[in-house]
Image (tube, rainbow, N blue to C red; front, side, top):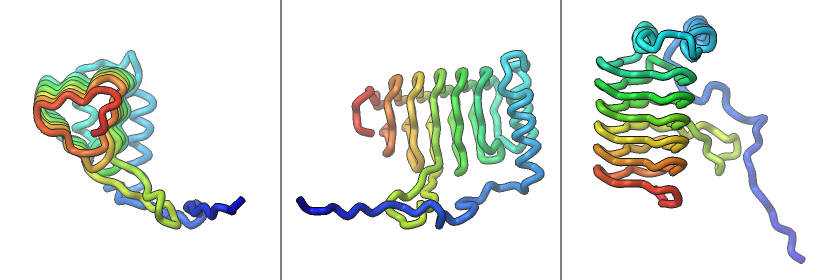
Length: 179
């Protein structure tokens, strides 16, 4: 039998930070407190969620509906167009900017993830990229959109589907489809 040499990152060498959070530690702490004590709660008025995000630097259009349980990593790296809906328990992990167009529906549990790591690097360094969801797209329940991608206008990312590259306008990405 031949021994196989496996290479993997050494996590102790991970470079601190890895990306620009865009604000200082004090501001980050205030956002975390507001998000976890009020913003995500079922009892917090839905009509106030866009106002809170705007207060922390997000660009939020009119008629935006943000349901309870929604998690936003850094509001100042978020833009949402008019009349978009963000469903319960969606996670907008925006270590890089995430732009959501108008008339976009992010269904329950959708995950937009602009952060990752380079598994080939010896120190597991960050490998992040922005995400754009164009007008009229629907990201269905529990779908995952990964960093550095654009979901084209009027596209549908079906429930539990994964997007890891750009999706052309008007495309339907079914579960099991490689996109």
